[in-house]
Amino acid sequence: MRLKTKLIIIISIAAAIALAALFFNNATAVILSVSSARLKAMNTLAVDEAVGEALQSGAEYGDFMTVSYGDDGNVSSMTANSAAINSVARRAASLAQTKLTQMSGGGISIPLGAFTGIEALSGFGAGINIKIIPVISVECSFVSRFTQAGINQTLHSIYIEVVTDITIVLAARTERVLAASEILVCESLINGEIPQIYLQGGLLGSGSLVPAG
Image 1: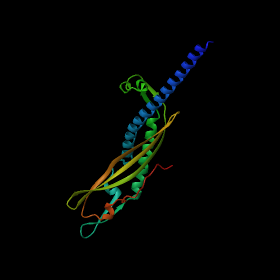
Image 2: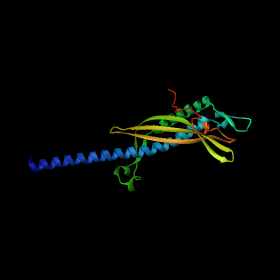
Image 3: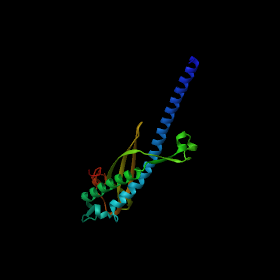
Image 4: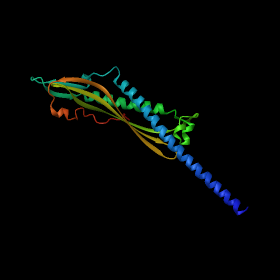
């Protein structure tokens, strides 16, 4: 075989390998990008459903907080119902993790045009179902906020904060996706002056809760 022919073969093989590597890297980036976006959307839906189910028929302010008043009409104490807070947070975290795992179990559909790397073509072509392995961790905590609502009136709002940590595992690499959602649980208008110790936070004190193992 002539040297020129050998050289052409070597160059052709090298070019094919380079193109294959380029396509593989581009495909991996596309899969991770689309998967991240789809999982974030799934997470929003999963968290909304999970919190709704955890709260069941709804939540009243009195389920989580007890407010006592002094003779002067001002707030003398505010006590959080830790048992109720912990129960809801754990149930919401467990449900959100289960729902997101189920939603992502069928894989992610990615249009064929997305693999070209050309944004204008990213939505075209038949969908290719890509099986991904998401490693999901969900933490829930309650957040308490006070807002001035008028003369000697304060609006106390209680939110549940859900933080989802998702690791997308592919053959070539992994990608970590963090998503946070905050949902209003209940609120109440409180009359009278509230001591600064309650306004400065730490009122609920439930910490971050993960599903029980």
